[in-house]
Image (cartoon, rainbow, N blue to C red; front, side, top):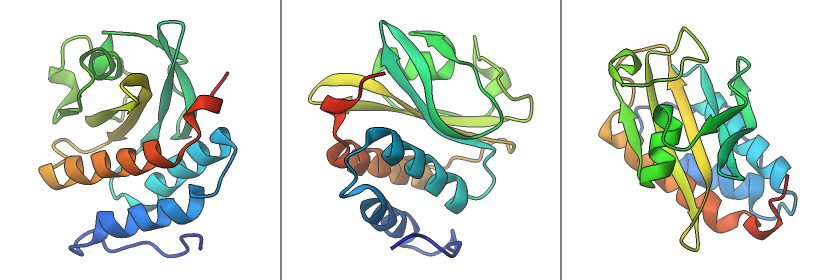
Length: 166
C-alpha cells in the first residue's frame, strides 16, 4: 500500500497511521537508499506546514546529506554544529520553536522558522539524524515530537542499517 491521500493531521491516530504507511513502504525494502527516500517523501507528503524533511547520515565524523524532500541543503554538517549536529552529538531529539534563537543555527533555507531533529541510533550506535523544518514558528508540538520519534524508531527497526554504506 502506498499513501495516496493526505491524512487529516487532527485525527488522534495520525502518527500511528503514518507509521503503518512507513511499514508498508519500507518493511520489505532491502535497499536502504530507497527506504530512506520513501520515508522522507512520506513525511513531506503527510506533514502540514513543513518545507524540508530528510536525513543526514554519519560518515567519518560528519553528518552527510542523505535522501530528502525540499530545497537543496547543506551537504555536510560537523557534529555539534547547528541543530542537526547538536542532536547527533547529544543523541537526543531537539525541538527548536524559533531557529533564529538557536545559537549556531545553520540556515540552509531562509524560509525555515522552526525545526525538529531526531537522532537515529541503531544498537547503541549513531547512524544519522532525521531533520524536519517548517516555515512556521512553534510548528512542532509535544505530539509531533512523540510521533516523529516513534516514526524514527520504526524506521530504525526496519532498515537494513548494516548495509548503509556510502
